[in-house]
Amino acid sequence: MREFLKTIDWYIIKKFLSSFFFTVLLFVLIAVVIDFSEKVERFIEEPITKKEILLQYYPSFIIWIAGQLWSVCTLIAVVFFTSRLAYNSEVISIFNAGVSYERFMRPYAVAAAFITFIYLLGSHFFLPWGEEIRQEISNKYLDKNSDKGKTTSVHLFVAPGTKVFVGFYRKDDSTARDFRLEHFEGAQLRSILKADRAKYLAKTKKWQIWDYYIHNFNDQKEVLKTSFGQSIDSTINLYPADFVDFASQQSMMTTPRLVSYIRQQKARGAGNVVKYEYELLRRTGDPITILILTFIGVAIASRKVRGGFGFHLAMGISIGAIYVFLSKFTNVFALGQTMPVWVGVWLPNIVFGMVAVYLVRGAQK
Image 1 (tube, helix red, strand yellow):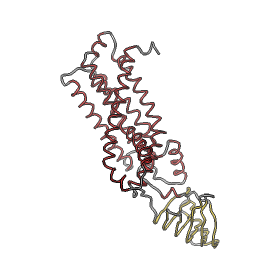
Image 2 (tube, one colour):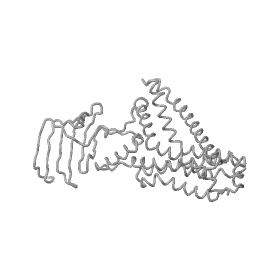
Image 3 (tube, one colour):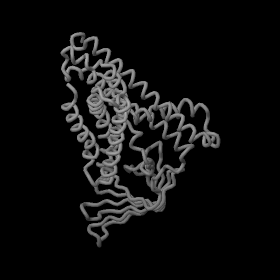
Image 4 (spheres, one colour):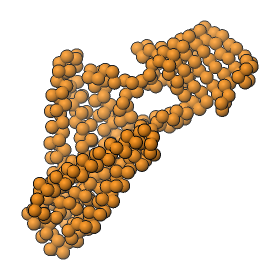
């Protein structure tokens, strides 16, 4: 390690990391102050406790907002301290000592890889955990109408060729009215169960169905068998969580849960899993952005110019704003299924990766 990283490398790494964490801390504090000023009236009006605010909501809010800002904070931190190095002629001194530009970027790459690794772990495991806590508090006290899950005229696939229809679902006691379970072979209806009422039993994980009758068909015209009954318990791949849909529900799942959920939905024949697939790919795509923005920041700020730090910072903030805009732009098209999900996630990285290559090649050597 000592041969790979010299004293000057550790100097740059320490400057990089200290500037980065200071920038993150500064932006997080500003975000917390703004969020508290917006929600203080709701905190007073709602029966939320101080413990929930101080030990649950804001710690999880800090984790969430830090995750949102890491990529941009990386760019700002790199521009900030590299510009100071260039202004103090330290970069020129390094080059005059015979250090190549590629060798000069080594400590930046090491520090950026370290931040990327932390962000990668966080985005797959820790950030969803924090988001779940934050959303639970927010949905309970601050945004009580955030659940957009349908409760009337609900059609759901519970397995390939098996569909459930619920006329009305009551979330308070997990009761469904006007319940219908249909089995198909291709486009051919084979059986249908109709019931006046059904209730999910949490202990047995089964549905108790009342006042039902079952039709079995050879084709759509001929009824082979009809069964009637007052009550029956049935195992159906349908759960109360299927009637819950928060806007950011996908971000509250750790990656193992998210992968399992996507597989479950696809096994059931459900096709609307785009936002979950986008979230899964985004958790890897966003950390890679840190490496790309680091190289862009070095290429911009290592050159000593008349505008000095102010010019470099303005360039860095502009590039960060363009990156955020492009990410949101492709996000909309990917979720709208106008473009493939992987394109929506990776297109900003591809574009900015080419920008990074161009800037590094043309950077001051």
